[in-house]
Picture (tube, rainbow, N blue to C red):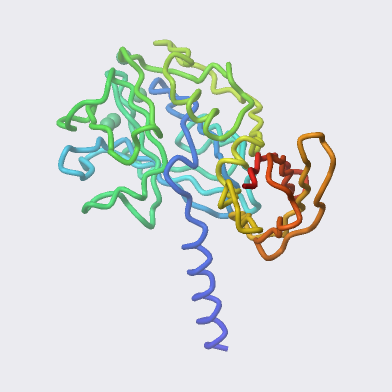
Length: 299
Ligand SMILES: [Ca+2]
Ligand SMILES: [Ca+2]
Ligand SMILES: [Ca+2]
Ligand SMILES: [Ca+2]
């Protein structure tokens, strides 16, 4: 029995490690330093059940360490997977979350004179030369400072460039205005981390849901990131077609008159084109619903 428990423990440990989010997997969408203090964020990935994220208001120092006399809030995701695109509203850090559980160490007080919040992995606390545990950041005291020398100031961690936001000038409360609510992860993250798209107020704001929709790969992205075809031009009777996922690819080749001259399913990454005369051809590659067309020149 002991062995089983220890095996389960090991497995759980491994699963927890695998489940960690990456920098930029969440982004802040709201911040209230007026009472009740709170914040909101969107997740761009499915968050596994029972995942913990820490939110500290300690500033980040130029020596690559947190300043350490402020508070931390602890959020644990619910007992089921939280789907990508979900917005979590922490309406009150002292116990009111739209989903999951939030509480603090009792020392979490966002200053109305300017403050910041960093989200990070509690199993990979940033510091000691390793910033990979950062998920997102929001600074509410003008532009980022060069160092954190007080509870209201903070440097921007290098790993959070592009994955954080600074509201300038200082204001007590701010929320993302939902102007962009549909797009790829990169598009949504860029819109959310752009302070031009935020509403600010020195009176408390109601944290709101934007009903985000994350769209998946466009054909262009697919072509850019998952297909390569070479040599091209080719003169040796074959062309290699590689995909990043190694799944079978449906290949159709058309001549310049639009006549189909090859139609096959490729599993070995090499297409025999020795039957084709010299000229220009269109190669249609598809996997499931994803389709792209490339030009092939045979010499
Ligand atoms: Ca406050
Ligand atoms: Ca503070
Ligand atoms: Ca203020
Ligand atoms: Ca602070």
